[in-house]
Amino acid sequence: MRNHEPRASSSCAACKLLKRRCTPSCIFAPYFRSDEPKKFAKVHKVFGASNVSKILNEVPEEQRDETVNSLAYEAEARLRDPVYGCIGAIALLQRRMVELQVDLAIARARLARYSASSPPILNDHGSMIPTLAELPACESAFQVMFPIKNLDLFELLLPWMPNRIKTTISLCPVYPAVVVSPSDWIARTSERSSAHDQTGWIAEITEPS
Amino acid sequence: MISGRCAACKYLRRRCPSDCIFSPYFPSNIPQRFACVHRIYGASNVAKMLQQLPAHLRAEAANSLYYEAQSRTQDPVYGCVGVISLLHQQIHSVESQLAKTEAEIAVLNSLAQEPAQIQENEVEATFNNFLLEQDIIASRRFSHSTYISSNFI
Image (tube, rainbow over all chains, first blue to last red; front, side, top):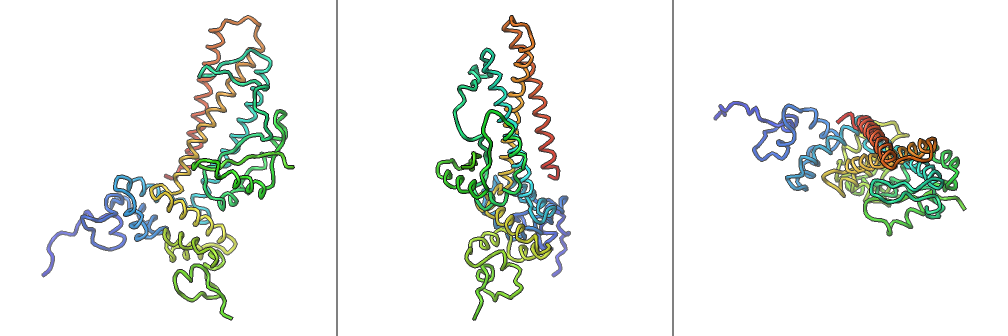
């Protein structure tokens, strides 16, 4: 007997693309509405519907919205940059972070020199900004934090480190100059890995011996 | 002599042809690399993505796919997008610190050019004004950099 029910207009974007009936328990329906067909198309192209479904089933229901958004972001990034995907964005941000850390180290050094020759200044919390004499004696110009847990990626990102690090710090009169070889840097980082917390690595730039 | 299969073909239980798209990037001695990538993307998607690229870019692509797949396995909700958010927060924090330090330098600079006797409240007012200005500049910088990095959301 023919089904005389009107065609369901509430078929989600996923089921429309996959050309299947959208059931009330469809896992995609709450997150891939029919008015946003491109969102699912992109996610499907990169991850595949069954992989997305597996990932969604793994996470609690209240976090599926966030999960879908991050999958959509990653898929978009991968389609725009088929070689690096999101890693391109991460490398860019890490580079910016390194540049800022350099600027901060230099600014602090300048401030320390000022403070040494003028009355102590209090910061927001009422504590004294350290003078040059009080700064801990150390060989490193600064510590740069990378929020990654993976040494493979660390090696991948090393070529992105701006050459500016070398030139800027060598001009800084307060701290000694810098930059070990990349393999030495990796070795130091892995030594410190057990001491560091789970949020990431600390890379330290010191004078080559 | 039978040449060894790559990790992908071992995993997929198939013959590894001489022109296998996976074998240069998924050697048999690192089985977890392909297993991880397969779990998130699936073999055919990975093959398609690699095939669409010129050969000299495929190694980088395989590496970045592995990193993203690992991140997604460790954090199924955010994957490597969590790293991006964290970086944005850290950048904002360092920009604020930088702005404040520059403000303090500016204050000391201006004090160095003023006569020696300055009232305490004048010092505080000058300091706070500079901090406020620098905070505004820093948040503009942050919004600009967030826009650049994430303008395709």
